[in-house]
Length: 155
Image (cartoon, rainbow, N blue to C red; front, side, top):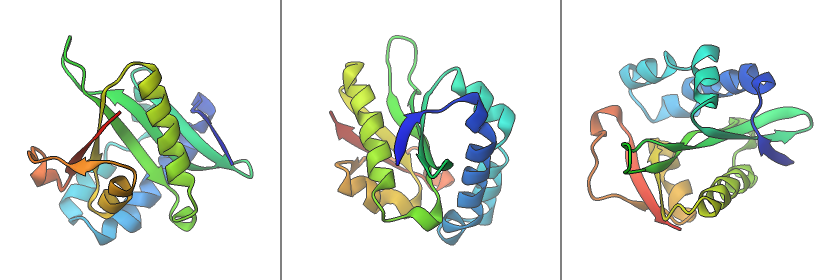
């Protein structure tokens, strides 16, 4: 398996991967309303725009994109808030270490950039994965209506 920067040629596969996550595993843990609002944002155009503002990585196995994740700064000017973003692993590849390797790459890039704290807006089904990776649930949860659990890891 290869973890590499995402390229324009990966957009279609990444969109399919994200949509499959919303229709599959995430559908088991989130309301229809929340899934519909997030799924509506999963378009090739959206991912192309995000390529300009986030550092995306894909995990590739046998020539197929099997996972995607990004390092993003959701903070205000002068007050960065670095987060893991758009993190999906193909359901048939769960529990094989792919997510851990992809997350390790994102953490390494964040550390190299001098990031001291890394946040993640976790879906309900992924909280245990992030806890196993050193994240803790934040006391303050501003996106409760979006069924997101914010978590933080010190780097």
